[in-house]
Image (cartoon, rainbow, N blue to C red; front, top):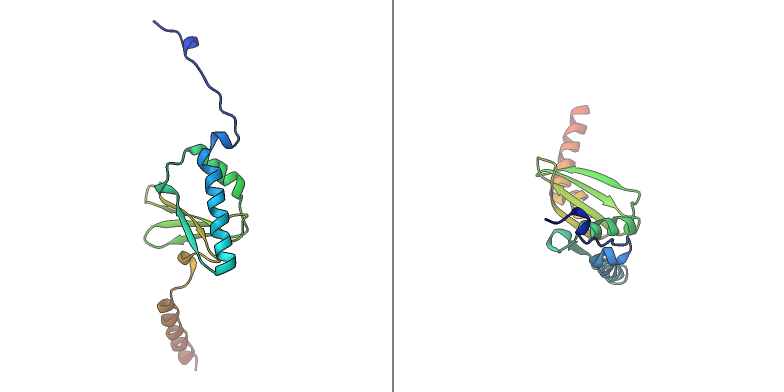
Length: 137
């Protein structure tokens, strides 16, 4: 019978070695942000499609930080949009009804599509506002 003390334990440091994919993602973000700045090309990284560990996600959260803008969206389920401290990089999470993250993206853009008003909605609102103005006359 083995004893608990016989089990080998390896301690990982909290640096980049503990988050091997985190640094690679920062390099990818630099490329995508450069493309946004120089060519106006937007990009996105689907974090759920990558083999990321909790350490990788914590590394990204630490190094990207939080920016000035946070939005909650209720469309086909709850979503959060958080600007990171790196302007132009947004952390977007989509949740199910149990508050579990179902999709998670880093979006490289001036403004994520999920918080932009859809042109058809804006047209409809213009008509609604015009109708209200007619009622006031």
